[in-house]
Image (cartoon, rainbow, N blue to C red; front, side):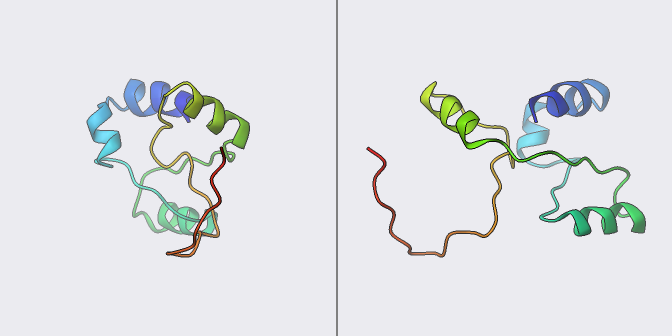
Length: 89
């Protein structure tokens, strides 16, 4: 995600951090099929597919007090609204 953001979105396409955060000039598809459909229909010019972020990496970033890039922590299925979690302490 960081490489895509730094080299492609910011570098090659000239998007700012605010453009990326506000999804100006970029979009997000929740599935491979939706992304492929958007490219094939001409709704978007390009699509990028990324592997899921390993949970160890998410934990390391959180422990360092950092934030993950937008949409890099998307997961499915979503936790039902109102579900109570056990503290991880």
